[in-house]
Length: 365
Image (cartoon, rainbow, N blue to C red):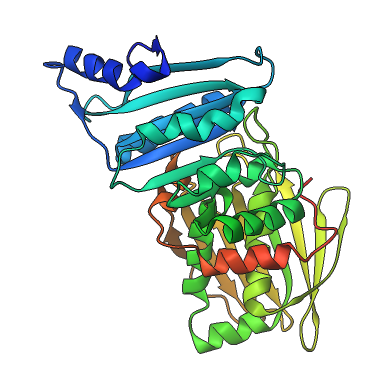
């Protein structure tokens, strides 16, 4: 990132022009495919969100408008600054505008008026709402009406029930497409299970499931502490697609148990934490699907190459040769990139939110 220049709001665009004039001959090319607005409280995740923005522009250049609300600064605080943000790769010549807006809690309702003059017209507007949507914020609806797509971060919430209800309400009131970063992070697993069970015989086995075991990475960092969400999403997606009925959930000493009812039997899901320092927090490590007749599907990440999933399928009478499925290599910011370029609201995600919003007792802790 280039030097940051503190300017008055009226001088944002002139200063950006001056900065770009000074960069002529440096090999940097100004580029922009869309507007990316990041809205967050001033907390420990701000640095992480800045790094995500930089990862995004490395792949898809955009104008980044970063809005931070700080409840600890004087109530009259309104600070704006500009800089140029570029890819970390020296081989990438593109660079993008970065507009920082810092507001006090009392001034936060001015955010839409600060942002609107700096949205590049005729380009899509993507809003990353990095705070808990279940908490009342008078700015949310105004910003969402500016956005082509609103991307939430379920890491910000302490209750998936409240999160699901709030996101559905935001969808209804704004009409914008919606997404969630943790939903994007399990895309590979959803693709893997869809490919595995697309045949009639495999689908029949799926309907015969009696037990699911998911191991997830419980490693916590200063940016991530709700490490169970991706596992909850994946098992909830399976249950929703299969038409199972939620029965109960309870915590054990080293795992969480969720029970579902089908038309003729029950299915028990166990979520088991496992700490892996080489993997991102919350990532799903292993999935076991056990059928009533003893047929087993085992999926596990390779320890040497975590983007490679080893697949083992066995029955009481035979064991097939192992297979492999390859995920995209994980990079910080990749989940946001996927959700930015996903068209519309995923019907599966929308269905999952509706289902989650009706549940009680399903906790992310």
